[in-house]
Structures are given as C-alpha cells and as structure tokens.
Length: 169
Image (cartoon, rainbow, N blue to C red; front, side, top):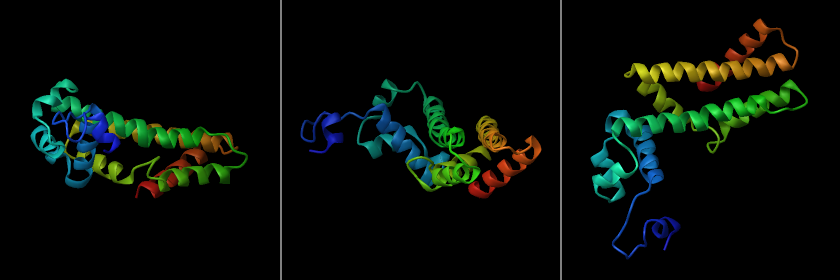
C-alpha cells in the first residue's frame, strides 16, 4: 500500500478520499499540461477517482481552486526567487549563482508552472495583475540584492531586470 493510499483510506477499503492537496496537485498538473480551460471540477474528480461533491469539502467553487493555484505559484516560485535574492553570501557572483540555482531546481522553481500562469494571464485580467505584481516583487528583490553589493540603484535595477528576464525567457 502506498502512502497516498494509506492517507486516502487504504487501497482495498473502497473509501478513497481525495485531500485538498490531491485536488490542488491534480489542478496544477492539468493547468501545466492542458491549460486553464481544462481545469474543471468534474474532470479532476474523474482523474482522482472520487465524486465531484468531495471537491466542496475543500473549496467553495472553481474560482476558489483557481485562487489556490495562484497562491501555490506565488508561495513557491516567487518566494524561491525572493528568498534566494535575500540570502547573505560573500560576493555578488555567489548571489547570482543562487538565483541561477533557483531556476535550475524544479523543487524550488517550477518553470512549467510559471509558463502556465503567464499563458493564463493573457486571458484573465485578475491573473495578469497578480503576475505583474509578482514580477515586480521578484525584480525588487533582485534589485535589492545588487544594491547590497554596492551597485547604484539604477544600475542595480538594470542588472536585476536583465537577470530576471533572461531567466524567464
């Protein structure tokens, strides 16, 4: 029996339940692979092999789930960059390498999720506002990182933008 089967009530119990994390993970994967239009309660329920009514134990609506996806993205991808930029290291080269590591480690920064959020933002003004705010937060952290190593604010901002935009493609 896998740990997920144990958490869900056992493989043979016939009482399989999806957790909030299961719903969120299934929605994230669907968003990444198929796009936001395919993130539907009924299809996620089928994918999780549960009734769609179990969705409402964890979310009030599809919009609530979509907000959870945006929160997850911000708490992982944006937080990873900000945290890496704030970490004290002896040289600016080491600081920039920490940022590169962030983008290279899918456990820290999910590139596919970032691209999916960007695609979604082209269709939804609310998501676009959150994306722009996140971009600004990331660039601010990178700018502050360069300032800590003695760069003038304008040069720090330029370096932050070049570093950031080079990484997000």
